[in-house]
Length: 131
Image (cartoon, one colour):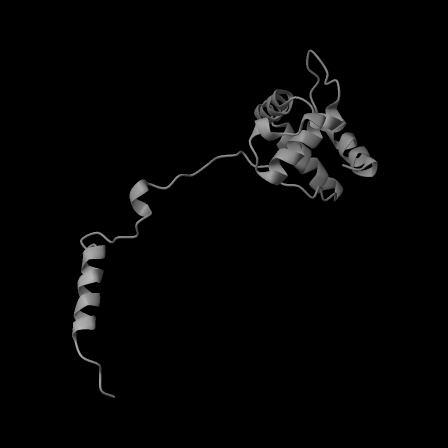
């Protein structure tokens, strides 16, 4: 994150951030870790060491989510006409049922390898086609 980007973002954060018992030691580094994690789609533990401890970024992201800081930050940026250029999601994974992977329809015949072998053997046994 460049200094100009951080300057714009820090002004927005100051406007919407609720003060807690303790302040962040390096909020810029923590925000950079959160942005890195969401850009790469990586787990929290994959955050590079130079961006600080992974638990700090995860804890900040979760706390700010519960306190609606991210929503207020986005609303304020939209009101001021600032494009943040990032998207944060909740990290929800939607899993499909294991039976959806095979694509077989209900009531339809399942194709097996044995049927394919039989058809291949029948085609090989039959003579050449005349055009």
